[in-house]
Amino acid sequence: MKNTLQVLKRLAFWTSHATIAALFGFAFAMGEPPAPETPKKRVVAAAASSRRAAPPPPPPEKPSPPTRSQALDRLVAAYPDFLAGHDGTALLWRDGARMIFDDGREKTSGEKLELADLEDQLADPYPAGRTGLNPPKDFDPGRARHEPFFRKMYGDCKTEPLESRMVQVVWLPRNDGRRIAVTATNGVAERVRRISEELDALPKALLKHLRPPGGGYECRSIPGTARPSMRAYGAAVAINPASGDSWQDRRGGDGAYMNRVPWEIVEIFEKHGFIWGGKWSHFETAHFEYRPELLPGFDPGPPSAPPARPSAPTTSTREPDTPPAPRPASRPEPPAPPPAAALPAPPPADARPTDAASAPDDAEETVILPLPTRQPRNLR
Image: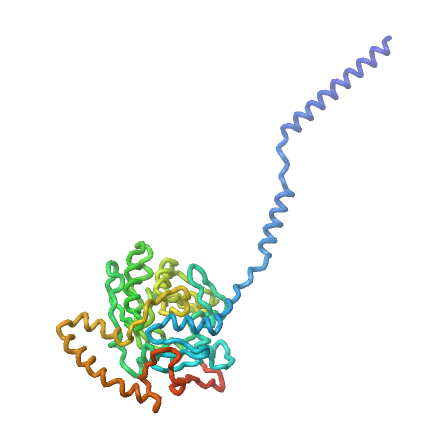
């Protein structure tokens, strides 16, 4: 009996201690702080490191150029005052001249700038709208210009004075008031006036990019080259140079693309037929030039007589003197038909065909510039 009682006492003792220990261990376990989620952190860190190691996205590819027919159609639609049509291989000017589209030569990117034909002029499609920043290498839509094409329309400031063709446009009438000179040809002066009025209504914070203006007409070449700037024709405008960035200023550094010009300014210029140098790989972000052939959706309006544009400002500013002036100018026009009748004999320069298809073949103007034996030093 005694032995049985002793066994029961020992069982009760050990059972109570075991229960207490279990309860204490349970309480301790419940109060223990949660273990750190080391595996999850390691996974996140691994994911982050994999993101850092991911290769950068490939640069955007150059868009395909327009076909020959599309390019010729765009040129004719963009400059109705001067171009009568095309025959599939050349432009037909209203004065009877014929200018070939493609000289048939393979060129390097540098030669396309120095010796551009009309095909090179439209080879890089211009990306209108809020796109086109940091373009791929050597993608410069509009930077290649067929110089004979622009000299024929706007004139050559190195051989003839062009000041009589220029109009002084007030820049930002309410917020600046300076004047810039631009050409009246192709209605550029009127377009710049409208641009100026729309820019003048932008928020005050954006005006710092516009004033003072960088200027308009200036008879000069592109820095570092012998090629004329579009400002030498009076068909380009520069906004505040302090807000502009140039690839030439970054040649000694990393050469990375830079831009500080807001989209609101770019959109107003493009709306009126101007392209922006900020969409060139050789960027000039303060530069805008009138190039409607690169903006397919742009409508320049109906054609008008080219001589009437330069004389428009004089007739509006000097009304008393103008009545006698136009009459002598219009009276000699009746004797003009004799030269038109004698048109088949010599190839006259000022004969104007009534239809695009009637342009004489012997009045062909084949503008072919010889390729240099070695690449010029100032290609870029």
